[in-house]
Image (cartoon, rainbow, N blue to C red; front, side, top):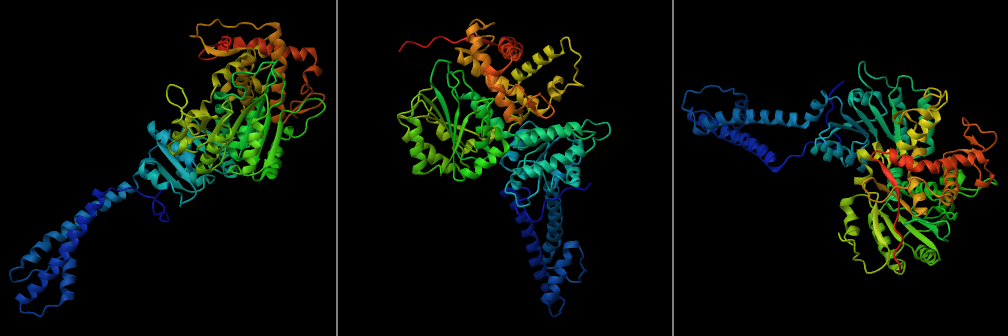
Length: 612
């Protein structure tokens, strides 16, 4: 394994020097020039004193010989210029050598230090996300090595300045991973913008054998396609051999979970006897827009039975629709055995167009509609213009929400936050509240893909499931993957627990309850009324249906879990009573699961609304 040197093709890949360092080079150069000039003058005068015809070329040559302290003695007294040149020349040479050594050591210090590292973090991909994640680890005094394929990457000089070691190469190549000392690393995070590249790296990592006597590093690979993630996870589980453990994550999906948890689609809750319809509008159907649509389809199930509406506006709406439904065909056409998961519609158009603005105003005018508008445009300035124009257009609908994706907090997010002071009173004259989301500072953190929001609750759900399934049964984690510890659970089973945990707050709001900590003085609800159970059990089954269908399951008889076929993917009234009891048990288990979370939680009644 060799040391990595800065790539010569990239002008900014090096160490940043301040003015004082450049000034020292100027001093060295000045000494050298002064020595050469004085030596030339001195040797010329010495020739005159010796009665010889002076030759400027000989004088320059002899002056250059002074730099390695070679000097032919002369019979006559030396001119003062030559005396000074004899001292300045070796001084300039020595200073230059010292500065050159310091420059070389400083330029390549990361490579030398990296040679002795272990337990470090390797990040593959130097985009905005990779750079921010590397900075986060450096703040925690963790050694970071970044692998980047593009030698012209604009962030390379920032890494050199911030003591982040960079390696130019393809992370899917074993030699590059060896240079990054991946076998000695604690974690490897693959975060390039291209799923294909990430997939190639994941396959390579799964083939590598751990170093003797060392625990293999945990490998986290970013992959947007959830169905591909599930398939790969099962493939790696079946063929894991002695390769490194690979886990998949998606920062866009994590951010969609966070946003819809903090600003739920149903607001304060939708009871079974109201006519409210939730309408999600997504402007721009890139990676974040797709994640929001999928998450909304998973979580948008309400006690009044009204289907969630999702309207996507994109300039390439037809192409985007075909691609999205290719991955999630269950959103296309309902069957005779179940209702549609949601009402998904695609509309061609630009976000900043009169047609889109008119269409949104028409949607806002519909009665009994809770409108959520997500602006997912990659260009920050366009997003800024669109969100303020829509705020003006919806001035009579302050109950709507305008959520705009902002790439970095330091760019435009503060502009939106300034409209809401610390006391919570809005400075906006009128119109919907503007909420920024999707900042790289929130999406690319260690906690975002290692300790996602609501993980304690999802863990509690899984532990309760294990406890009940193992009671009086011969099933073990060896013959039933669903009984494994949380850390060894496959990603699709984890996702199932997360979805159940996230929807728990939705169900509680539907019956006038909410989740609170144990420090809350309100009494914990340990059991729901029969009427509430009759409302929530069918709602849980509807959510379960959507979860299964969006994960690639389908209706069929008999049930075959290996082929993802289930005869229970049907409407509530078609279920056998014994299967309905599972959903009633899921509702009855909610207070127990909340109490087993870490830290413990509880369901409490919300105070009735104040009289108008």
